[in-house]
Length: 325
Ligand SMILES: [Zn+2]
Image (cartoon, rainbow, N blue to C red; front, side, top):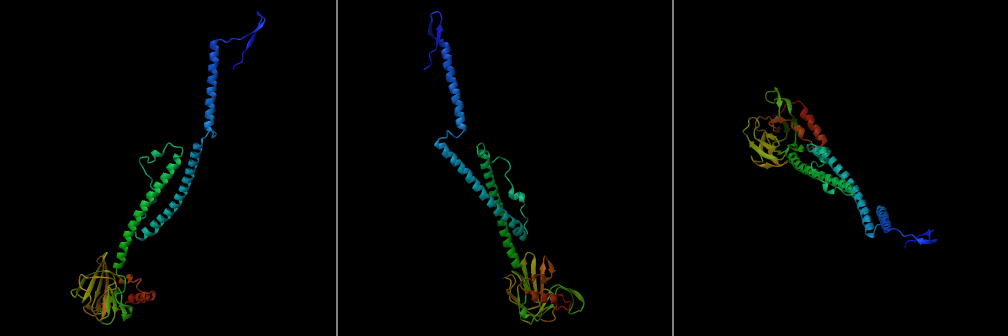
């Protein structure tokens, strides 16, 4: 209730009530309401900007948000660990596996490539925590892409390993006659004097001296492409086609244990020592061919011989003596 104001009227010598004009009264009331409303409005804005006015629901939502943020941080930590493990796998992939199987390393840019073109994260924009969510999503996307590239690389390596295994089984890599059966390694690959003419000429294989009938073994997996006496000088001989450009040849046999077209494994008994063809005494003349050229068979014996045996064979093979042809 508003105060009633009085004034002294000298004419009537008495106090009289002050009567406000009606319009003025309304104006005051209006100003009062406007002021209150303004003050209330400013107060509300102030309260909303502080946490004083949070309802229980708002408080629980805000706690939940804090929890999400914490979870996102933990997820990012885990992703960091995954990235480290992946980097380690990629390093081994490039520098061991792919190197070993003679595949080109996958360049870093290709493994870490981002995603060009459209903005994939448009739908995640415009929120308070957009930055965090976009960064995490992008990180996961890159990891996912890295995994796909790594997985493909390992598929490729698996294929190469299978091929390599076949190749390793195919190339002529053992001695065709057992050491205990050898009388001696008569002559190696290189310039030797011809047993018949005594002239120096190239000896294209290795001669293994052993008594007639001693078993001869296939030196690698392959298919018998010839087993006949129709090549001049070689006498009864066997040729094994190993694939990958490799062929091995076994000459001067007394007998065959395989037929043309037969598939053989490394170590299979294929024939027997003899002295057929251009031969001075029972021995095996052994040749290795690569891409239609004869190469030195001695380069293929690693693994099947002890270090001492290999050294002995090297010594004999390098002696410039007379070959048995
Ligand atoms: Zn020979």
